[in-house]
Structure formats: C-alpha cells, structure tokens
Image 1: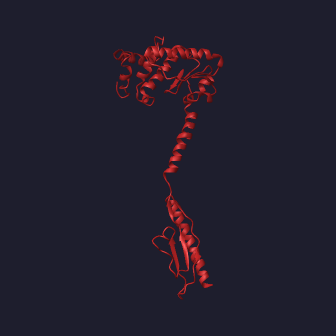
Image 2: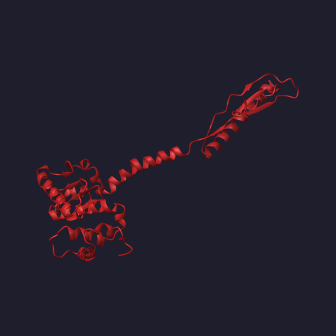
Image 3: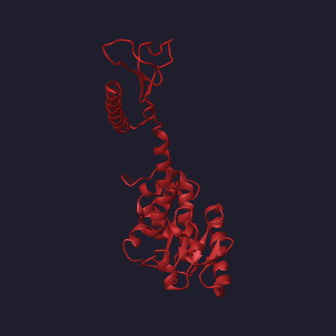
Amino acid sequence: MAGGGRFVAVEGCLRRLSGRVAVLCRRVRRRCLPLGTVRPLRPNGVASGWRLVALDTMAANVGGRHPPPDATAVAVLPHCQEMPRRAPLIKRTLFLLGVVVPALAWALVKPVRVAVPTLNGVSCVEQVCVDQLDRLGEAQALYREGNEFITERFGLELKQPRVVFCSLPACAEGFGLGARSAVTVGTVGTVIGPKAWKPYYVRHELIHQLQADKLGSVLLLLKPSWLLEGMAYALSDDPRPVLAEPWQGYRAQFGSWFGQAGRDALWERANGVWVWGR
C-alpha cells in the first residue's frame, strides 16, 4: 500500500510538471503532446523502495535505450513539436487583403464602388452604367463621343473604360462625388455626376483614365496637379474661357509646358515630371 500511495503521489507530481511544461510550450508557440500513461512495469526487487524512470517520447526507443529492468514505472513527458508559424500569418494576411481591406474601402472610399457599380444600384450595358434607364441612350452617345475624341486627339484608344452616369443626387452621393462634378478612379472607372452630362466633362474624365493607363495609377500620386488637371482641362476642349482657381492656373501652366512638348513627346516628357520638380 505504501508503495502504491507513493506511486500515486509521484504520478500527481508528474502530471503537474506536465501541465507546467505544456504552458511553457504554448508560450513559445509550440504544440505539446499530452502526458502519456504512467504504468507500472514490474515490482522492484530492491528493498530500498520504488524507482521511477522518465523517458522522452521521442528518445524512448532511439539508440537502443529502453527502461531499465528494475524500473517500476515509466512516465512519458511531453514532447514539444514546432508549429508552422508562417501559415497562420499568411492566412491572416490573405484574409485582411481579401476581405477586410475591400470591405473598408467600399464603406469609406465610395468612389471605388465604380469597380462593381451594379452593387451600388445602377444598371449597366457593357461599360456604360446609368441610374435611370430612360437616359441610357444619352449616356451611350456621350461615351462614344468621348472615346472617339480621345482617339483623335491623342492617337490612342482607351481600353474599354467603364463610366457611370448619375442622373440623381442620390446616385452621385452613393459613389462619393460630394461637391465634385465627376471623379475618375485610375483605370477602374469614372462617375459622371448629374451636372456633368456634357461632352467636355466626359472627355476630361477619360483623359484622366488615359493618364492612369500611360503613367500608372499609383505614380499619378507623385505627379503635380498642374500636369494632370491642366492636361484634362486644356486638351478636352473645355469651352469655358476662364476657370476658377487653381484650375485656370493649372491650365495655363500646362499650356506653356505642352507647347514645348507636343503630342508626340507628351507621355515621354510627362513620365519625367514629379511633384518635387517642374
């Protein structure tokens, strides 16, 4: 009985030790195997009492090591295995980029909704979208005229630009226009507001799409406003003789620069213009 009680006491100690080791393993981001069964082997012939042999789960049968013949019990201590550390990080990153970021962008940066305009309550026929179907023919005519103008003026064709034509303020607000008449999001698409159903407005925004295509959507952030807005105002044949500032100044500055570049060297020279220099 004394020997059995001592064995139970030792077993309890080992289990507490196993718990502490498991906690330590979790802290270092490892996976620990549970404590193995503590089982008696055979009685100890030595009068001095019981012996306990603890063997690591991986080393128990490596190199010919086996429990000594006079052992009375074997406790299998936890063996910690490396957990794959990169997999959870990759999964979290993919979830962040694939779900969280687009959801936040959709909610907070409304113009990006032009990427999937039908989810924002408009109807689309090919690349032309409207909030009121009875104005679809008018929108398609403006779209065709704008694309033909770009081809003639720049000698280039846009790659099927998407344009959303909003007739109602609610549509414009849904795409985040605010006080703007129209907005273009890189090469993704353009939203035309209720007051911008005019040929030169559509041309202006299609020029912005062309800029994103030729100069790169991200690099546009490093281009000066006089180049981007000045080009759109000057080369869209905007009929207004005087614009509000700073647009009038941008148009004048671009006109001076463009006179030196010309159409053939336009994009080559524009590639070398940055916000930190002329």
